[in-house]
Length: 104
Image (cartoon, rainbow, N blue to C red):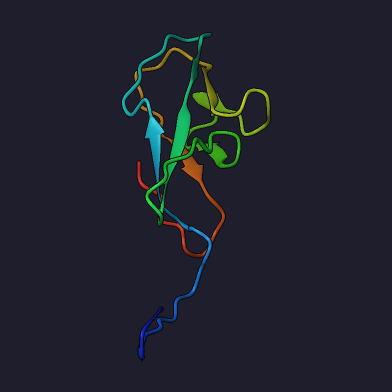
């Protein structure tokens, strides 16, 4: 910027936004055996944006014998309960980046 005989400048670097957190919903869902439920994953980016990343994360289930969850399109994030047991399963969404921190 120049104004008369006075000038000033500033340096800055433009970087791509990075994933800081991943939020999965619904957080505490209950489904009957033989049914399915759609889960979603939303990323919190360093620039404040929150895009839906349901089809871009890897979905896993802690207890595959109890419930499954798909990472493949078009069913990404769709969980299915296999058996009728009173045991909780935890599904996870993972973003593969060294800077990302997943949160359930």
